[in-house]
Image (cartoon, rainbow, N blue to C red; front, top):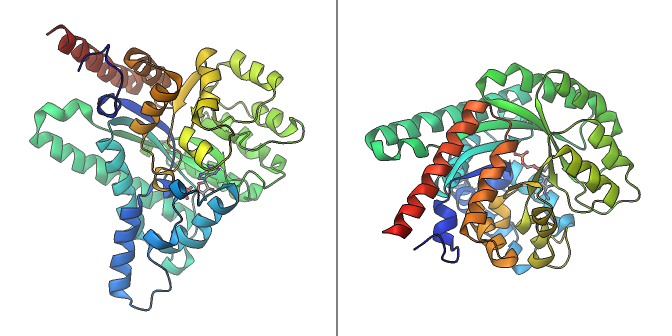
Length: 367
Ligand SMILES: CNc1ncnc2c1ncn2[C@@H]1O[C@H](COP(=O)(O)O)[C@@H](O)[C@H]1O
């Protein structure tokens, strides 16, 4: 297959990629949730939870929209993934899925939560996820040591802590404090997520000011739904985020600011289209507009467990719907590295991998 051939899934999978917008709990595959459920039901036949393969609606059948989406977490997944063992298992599984999909750097994000039934507080939750990340790195190292050829392909993992729109200021401050405390262990930033209909969020401003003061990366879910006026968007821009997630319903004057500041755009096509957050299908997705305008795009999956579209499939979608060729996909993937929260060394490692990949593709074409 040559670099001038039309891009296919084999190409987008082999292409080294960075994933910058992936919610840990939403990225757990249905199969992994099913395995957790099987283990629980075999230990407790009276478990009052249905099999996730039945309980979680299929997005491909049109069974999920923005109203039915958020309760999937509160009513089901959080009830299932509710102890140290299942959080560890799920985190390892999510990371392995990204590695298998050709992702070489991921900034996973998660909302610290209290699990009273398991005696886990928010700090405990963060520690469990960080430990699972460390275990994944160690197991990967062992595997690569056994196979020296794959060494450079290693998936590097960082963590972003999410503040939910429904949090109080005190809760949000706790998230920022945890991010600062565990920074040395791979936390790189703060996110604002949660149901976008939940308003107001102005009470959270001091938490983002504190995150900024501490030098943490800031990303926010931005304009997921249409809104009256742009006050909320303008306020979020005052928090000085380096990146914005989704960026769907944005008035022209706000687009101008985003372009001037060259903010990173975490665009999640399948989520937006399948959840009906954006209109007009894939072809009408705002990816096209920002790509043409030279925006700093990081294609992302959002919740691959629910939307069932991997990052390599997202790259294949932009090839299919916007006509990007192999070189443009490679450029897109390379460009996303500009906006990672990881340090210069991390960026250079990823660029090296990408450049090597491209060189090999070219060599293959010449032979
Ligand atoms: C349309 N896309 C989205 N928009 C806004 N927030 C989203 C989201 N997808 C996921 N989340 C947020 O991430 C949490 C699950 O992962 P964690 O428990 O944090 O790992 C959800 O509860 C929701 O608050």
